[in-house]
Image (cartoon, rainbow, N blue to C red):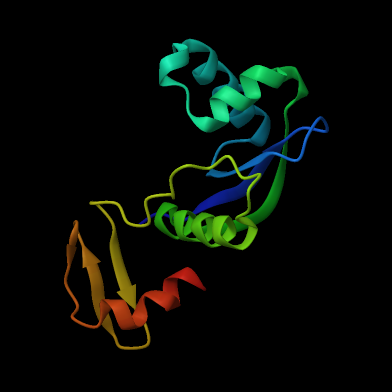
Length: 138
């Protein structure tokens, strides 16, 4: 597992209270451009809730700001993102899916019980559920 510098970020505008929370290891200005370009390249029937809203108000009105910065694996960054999504969840949130917490090529090691929890897409440790909080709250 490689350690990255990752960000939990928020997309929002001053026009209304709607927002989107995401995570990235890219610079935030680049990530905003990626969202904008990806959204504009899709046909309207394939737009997500986020795409539809930000296309409607105009991507030039959309801002991106960091909420958190972490030195961690991509998997842990997804867990931080999910935790943030849960904290800020309300009627104005544009997120429709949670981040994938574990990737098939990840290997997670639990210090407290000295065992491997997740190895190449399979639960390896029977007590994984009991110890998952260690990774979410890392």
